[in-house]
Image (cartoon, rainbow over all chains, first blue to last red; front, top):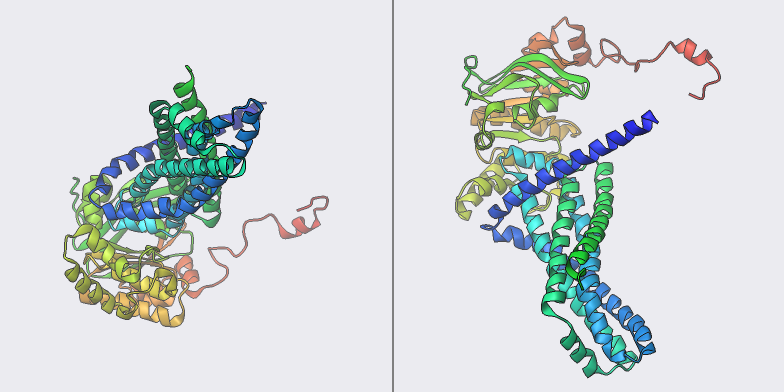
Length: 260
Length: 275
């Protein structure tokens, strides 16, 4: 029993120390963001490797998620003779929930794990330490541009995901199942609210982008600088990002849509 | 800023330094002097914290006790911006080279110049080519770090370390894992850079011959203490068992061949245990 409590105490203390290091790291990173602005090339390079290279996975997943939504939605809605509302259903699910959440999960898997591995390897091969010895702050030069790029890319990727998903839903709905195309679009236009649905979805994806980039960069920076340490850190990035994204999604949804 | 006076003519002065990692004492109250314009070597078995010492001098780690003075500045009392300014005048060659893997050789050498100066690109090009010429790799400027051999990577890293014309260079195990030809090239480079550029060099190494060939002064460290010091000749004639074992590479001596264990015969005869 005592041993169990001891273990529990150690575990708790370790996680709190890590949280403290993480917060400190985040503050350093954010204070370094300003020094990125005069050097847009650094940011653009990272936007390319974090954002642009995630295009394919986001587009294809968005298309399939939208098509599945179209199918599933049609079967449920047709029971009530409300097939015309398919557009609203598909668009609302994507813009409010699936767009931000699924694209954030994919982002953590594709870009987040790559970031952790990259930073972890830079640490393991003494590149970060070498930079420090050259009087270059690795946080400002390496971490902050990547953080900013992740933070800015996420909402754009989520928007892309939703847009492609809506097209996918339409392909299946009106192309395959015969829902009226005009009804699909006009109902969507009439029912979806800019403030309630779209802005809230964008806010979600901004929050997820912030958290996923933070976790990925911190895990890399905090990794034990060996090949084993880096591979563990990469796993942790994906697991922790997924938990944080889903947990935060619940909280944000409660705050945004709780009073409806 | 703390301006403690360091002994005449020494650029780096380590005074009463203690440092531990966990429960293990890495340095126990040691003092070393590194003279200006000379090559000073720190030798000792692996795991005696030689690299740690370089990180302490560079201000990347903090000592538990003692002070480290570099060119009149107490490294661990400096403000961050002053420490960064001091580091611009300290080059360090990491064991792995620590080249940035996403840039080619030219950009790697240009990196400190681009970060710290506002020189026009044409001037940077000239400087980079001069530094690359000095290490004999001007022709390799467009290669990526993963296309370089270990010895080449270290020479490029050396070109990068001298890019800002520092007052000193710290070499972390420059000869480890090199073939004889690369070793020869590095020995030659360290010696000639030291003479031509008037640098102060600190070489951390366990390669006895190579280091003894170029060093002006040697410290031998073992178990957190200095077990021998002097010119290469003095070290060779040292009567210390530690120094003798290290220089001749004897398998047994003060550093034991056997990892601590209980008596061999007892161990073999005790039955009923799996291991």
